[in-house]
Amino acid sequence: MKVNDKHLIAFATGSAPVDKQGYMLKRGEVNKAFQKRWFVLKGNLLFYFERKGDKEPIGVIVLEGCTVELAENVDAFSFELVFPGSGCRTYVFATDTQESMEDWMKSITCAGYEYMKLMVAELQRHLDELNTNKVKLSNPTQNTRTPAQAASSDPWSAMTPPSSRQASKLVDIAPPADEAKPRRYNPFNVSDATVDLFGAQPFCAEEAAKCSRTFEEIHTEYGKYIEQKMREHSLSAKKQVAS
Image 1: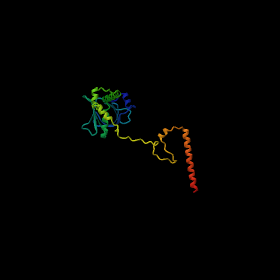
Image 2: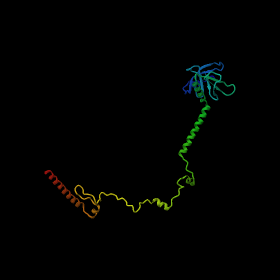
Image 3: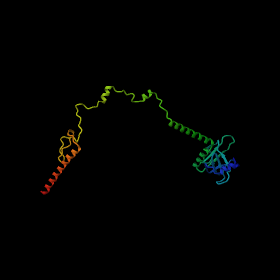
Image 4: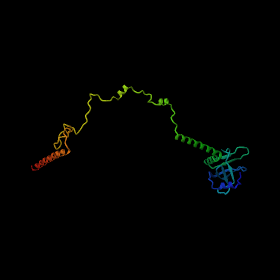
């Protein structure tokens, strides 16, 4: 179709985002020779210009209802747009490389409204699945098993409890009566302990229980005892020095 509408021209040369652009060879409808054109793909409209930077396109192809196929009996790296129905034109394009041809075929295939509608439906299906899983995670199903089913799945339910006699044997872990228990060591109640450095007898808890004295009496008694031992030690030291 020829461009004669100002709105299409404004859209083709305006600031609308470009999906793909570049040079391709296009075979003419009357003249079957290939001509180099600058193509701009915006949405489902494929504009073509005589050269890059032109203010107006020389044509536009509406990419709806067509199929993208490899061209037969044509030079390498060629593909065609086939529109259904009798009398519809088939557009043939050619590129310089295999990669460029595949890239253009993919971009044109994804540009149609039908393809976008399928993509939206697929995305909506994934969104519904995510929302369903979110609801299941936030509201987990309760356990609906019967008591019999729960008991059958419990490995401990199959165990028979022991009898009272068996239970008494299990808990009867006391040592025999004739086995003497080890006596705990008490450092403050040893009758056979030797005297200390000052000749004092060790403290005996049993003897202390028999004798009841005040703290003042004990303090005075041990004070006199320590003074006596210190005097004896001082005299012994003087004798050693004198000798």
